[in-house]
Image (cartoon, rainbow, N blue to C red):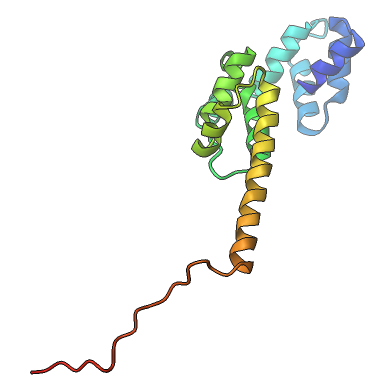
Length: 177
């Protein structure tokens, strides 16, 4: 994906894309490409689509895509910080493009995995765009953390308004038998 983004930026044609992408390969990936070229006739011309398909089939097998898609389907924020949840969401969402191919779907799917308390608070925000939802979530989490810290500080510093006293037994009372 990173290589394709770079190739789109510089406006390469298919032949240039293959030359540039194969130049960037290193280690096992470079060995893989050398083997692909070696088993084909020397006059074989690979298209960019051929290269991408061969690369994906070898380095990103369909079974791995299915595992990542399932991981995305099961993604929950739980107690993780919102930033971590956003990173995981963005990293895994590429395996379920049809679930996040519009801003509305992206927001809905993001909210689905949030912890219930944060989800409840953010439903009130009525954000129009996905990025607004992210910004609201980060702000809410920060404000909530500050409130919790403030409460802990006050609990340690301020004396209790209603001291807890244990009832003491009356020692003067003597049961009579």
